[in-house]
Image (cartoon, rainbow, N blue to C red; front, side, top):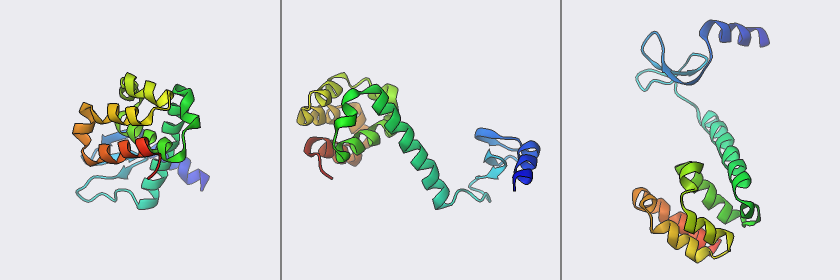
Length: 139
């Protein structure tokens, strides 16, 4: 299997971002046609593989950025991962008051600060769910 992988990588090229191939189809990786018009897209197990890697990356970012993240219970960790996944770490770090409240274990204030934001207005029910988890520590 190694030889065919090497040959296909050489012939198709390797792209880390989506691009339009010579047939004008949206393509990723090594010639994977994901175009809505006739592409094969991604299977659920491939989507879950990517998502699992993304969650692991976000957890690492949060652990490296906030000493207190490690000590949160799993529900609050998951809420913070959800927010960071959605916003990206640079935008999440702009929530100075909410993050200070998280560090001080004042989860009600943190939830209030997160909820009274432009982010919450933009994401609707997601904000209700995430801030409730932060406040209560439970799903």
